[in-house]
Length: 319
Image (cartoon, rainbow, N blue to C red; front, side, top):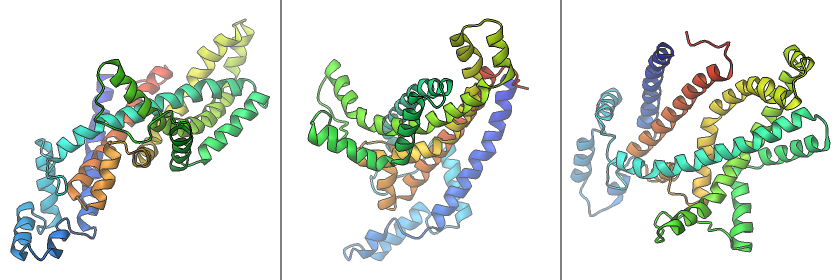
């Protein structure tokens, strides 16, 4: 196990370096100037703008700038935000807990929906429950998150007035009331992401269970007199989850992309809204850091999926 993790980490290191090279090169060659507003301001001399560009090394070659950025990042210095006027790592640590809370809760909700519904539909194919579940899954997967988010705001916030549609980080309440207020304002973003992912996973869980439930060893387990619930839980679901884990890991970029849109709709102060604000302000250090963090999180989830494979299928050995 330890040797397997070491090998996987050795593969992750060049992947992270390669991603950082591509991201930095694309952003460095992209049009735009973080000090463009200074150039259009007649009260700021051109010498001041040139001095700032020289201070931050924006006129240096791309390779020189990359190695300077990578070396500083390895030492914990992720740069300075041109728009917010504070360190980039401070900005990210302020925002990333909210994003991880929303994404983590939505993934848990998606699995809580997809696993029981998909398994139950697969054990009763073409039944009324299966047809209803398939129809709702198609509808949920077809509706984009921004459309579902707007519907939720119109229904639960404007029409019924049950939930706030703007996420507030500065809630003045204390004690259990503080947790309750945070729970209420996180319900809609989590539900929008969770229902979208749950609809996609439901179809995939159903298909995977249908493939496994027809295999010979399942028929043998039934012939031995095992209860149907034991056959499904111990012999079918565990093996059917292997492709589902792969799908969850591969869908993480889409999950983060959906989180960016959802954070904009509900004004969630997460890392996704920080990325949008940085793009609009042409704040290159923040854009680079946020996209790099997203990439590292996707690699981390894929590494976790590889580890889960061995727990689900004993035939997979960590050698």
